[in-house]
Figure 1 (tube, rainbow, N blue to C red):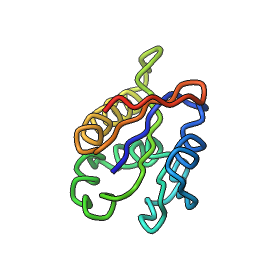
Figure 2: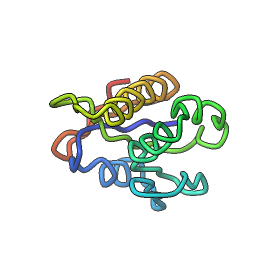
Figure 3: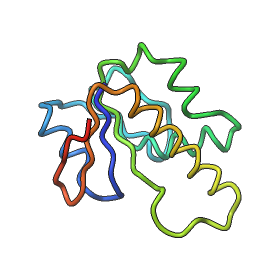
Figure 4: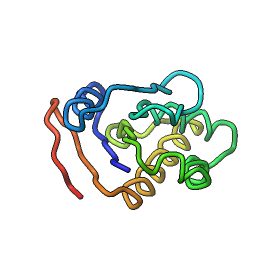
Amino acid sequence: MIFVFGGAYQGKTDYALQEFGKETVCDVTEAGEPDFTKDVITGIEGFAARLTAAGESPAAWFDSRRERWADKILIVTDISQGVVPIDKTLRAAREANGRLMIYLAAEAEQVHRVFCGIGKRIK
């Protein structure tokens, strides 16, 4: 698995498609579950927030489906920067997203950080 992360609107998906020559994308930012028949799964932070709101651990959800994403590119927006939300639910989602990123980075063969459309391999 290749893990790509960075801030919002930094060109993560375009970078992944160009860098790795992939074509099919599943975006789970707003709704749905990841479609692991696609090459690239993006918007995982939105999916993680929905799992957290439902009382599920995003890291545990991905761990139990490891074989389905082992050869995919997973893209997560890093939402850990900035002001800590006052709302308890948003804080929980932010923490769960961070823990998911730690898990995915540890499992990944490669980790890339994208900033201003420029990717840098860090693992």
